[in-house]
Figure: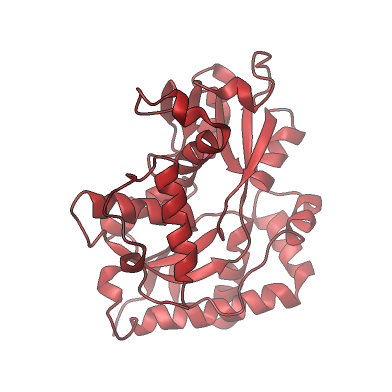
Length: 302
């Protein structure tokens, strides 16, 4: 008998339907939290520590694209499903007492804090730089920032912008908001992903041209049920988010108005991945004329 899947996830409000799938619909999987985000899950997938990851689109695509460019077409995992349809709002934060940083323009050439190289917080720094025109100004450098400070956890990121180790970092809006309200960090702006924000991946050993491993199929089916339960039981969702996770009830309710999960999680729209690759090329995350192949990243298409 095959062992239960090890499923990596980010322990934020977005994980609520996953918990409902396990709590109410018999999902047989070991849920392993990765508070440091998608970049850490990529390492864990490639190292055999987890079988499936639920994380940020830009992180998964950047990881596979860089692998393809380096001559490794396997990359360790493939996109098999869509977890969130809506874009992600990345809040841009600095320290509570950093008067020299007043707006996004103050960040040009500064020190960016990221959880890991290749994580969403790292990738979106380049997307921000591209949108603000900073990449052209840094053509002689490899980065639009004076330093990229790897800090692993959200807590370390908050500490770093207050100590001066980093000037700013980017993290999901509602996860950051609690710390704005407490006066620990200060918001200087925001940026939305130009793509749907969360995808599901599985290690290459669990996918082939014809079918997914039955355990992955079961996970996707149970996630569908967890999402339906989430949609049908919003008060239970608010209660879970405000007691089991690090959010206020007010913020949990506000988040519900901004998020849309798919009715069916299996499959990925190739157009979304093609667009993501194109923007990551423009932003300098992937090589402009590199070997990143969107079609090869996807095991299940919609």
